[in-house]
Image (cartoon, rainbow, N blue to C red; front, side, top):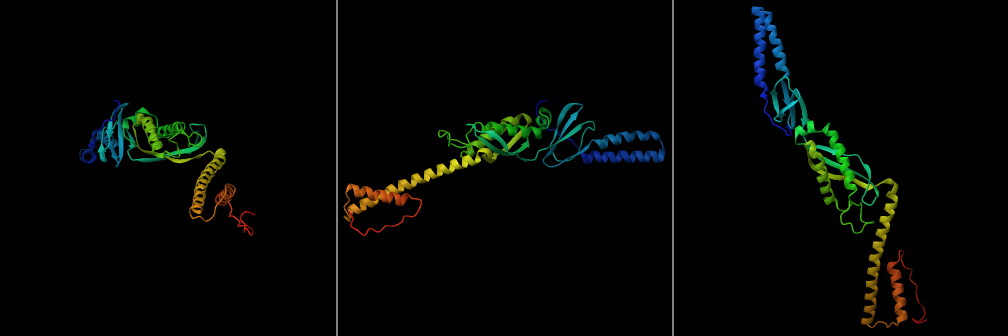
Length: 284
């Protein structure tokens, strides 16, 4: 038997009624006939009592008889089965697993901190009970292993690898899908169904976080400066064109260069410009 087998156990209330009849018969026999042989029924009563069990909603009982798997009861209610069965309870409820933050290296070797949030449940009770030891611990260990493998397959970002289209930081949908596929493959041996897997925390390791922050700030500053320069060039070009079209003033090349320089300083500078009033002539 390599797969789960669903079985129907006997109705516990019916067997309980029979048990009450046996108890009543024993008491009547002892009181009226006073035959000690009726005490033999005590062993039967004890065996019958041992066979009762309860299955709660979204739970199950795996039944084993002397080392042989007999089946799994998934229906909830009050049941009775062979009293020699050993019964293992396995929950079928969905469970959350928030892994610890682990330090791993990304694709290009940067140390990062990452953890995963996993939603899972038992789908095959036979595999969960007999194919692995302690399936809950198996889920934890294999999830950590999947996270480590995933982190080594992608770069944290594309600052160092501009050709990388999908990164841990920017490609969350693709990365989470890859993570879920990896965990699903690893947990299939234990009969575990992965309902959702996604990265819950992602950051550079503390020893490089400060340096990486400065690098990100530098990249942002360069990008902002580039936009400022592009805008300033357009504004200067428009200004010169407007002055020329309206015939406000004629510039020679030297004055044009001087004006362009002054406008670029004003538009691209970090501080507000200080106006200077020219009290002489334009060419003085």
